[in-house]
Image (cartoon, rainbow, N blue to C red; front, side):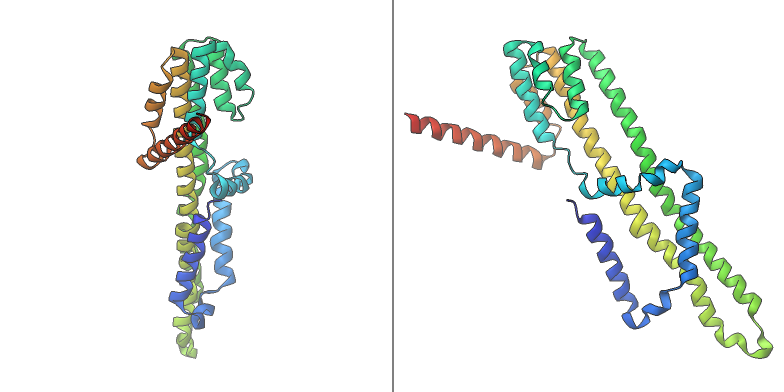
Length: 274
């Protein structure tokens, strides 16, 4: 579970509340302002996007919190194993292994290789699927990016509503100008709500979804290069080096340490047998 988003939002609210001060917190609570800002933003999003986007909010929250499921190191190790099997027993031997692969994209790529489809054709089909996925994810991210634009706008609308009502009700002859500061503060609360909603809710969610998308694209690109390499008959060792080079330095070091640990374990077992 990736708790950074929840932790960041909670700490953000804590910092704001600390800055306001508990004794002054009541000055920033206004039911009408909350209704205008949140309700108006949701209505604008509903008018801008298909209803299915609103329904997918729960799915998006699950992706934000539990979406770090793409493990390129595991994919590389699996691809290298498949490459070794293909060199030893031929491409048809991969069909049985494909049944054990849970990722539909990975499985489809392996089956395309088993069907002896040309390498460039395999690459083209898989990259088109990646592009379509990226486009779908862009639409999901745009939902929250638009929300970060609408929220401050509706906050300003709420402020204008408050100012108009305040000016309408002003009656200097009866001394009501003493409430001017209080009325002005109430009018400005909606802008405050809009800024919080945009910068502490919508923008962080949009950014985290973008990161999840980048992780999935990298994962799928590794699979594309791997299955194409298998189709072309690349040496498993060379294929692994090629795929590992696409990872960050930290991930490369982790894979190297794991490989050394496994090699050391095999050497100890061999020494014990002797």
